[in-house]
Length: 74
Image 1 (cartoon, one colour):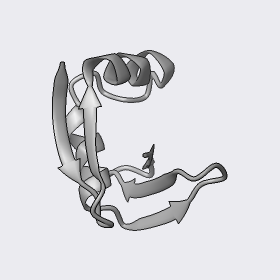
Image 2 (image 1 turned 45 degrees about the vertical axis):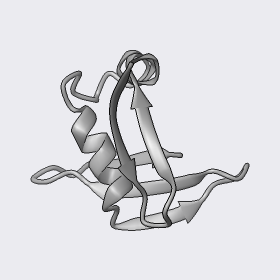
Image 3 (image 1 turned 90 degrees about the horizontal axis):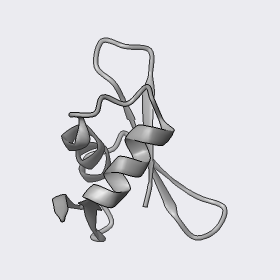
Image 4 (image 1 turned 90 degrees about the vertical axis):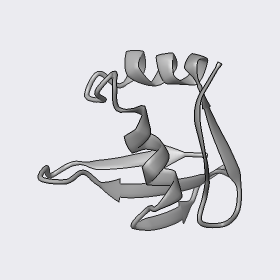
């Protein structure tokens, strides 16, 4: 099941499935289990995008009121 989808700044449509979301929240305990929209927002409106090591892009977004950053590979 698809939890949500967003177009990245470079025009790539990214879908977040429940399988990937379960992987994220079990591997990254600092992520709020109800926060999948924040992940999609990071892809759709990042502060910066970096190139990864193996062809992926990394969308980076600062969390409001915290000293934490979200880095989403897609």
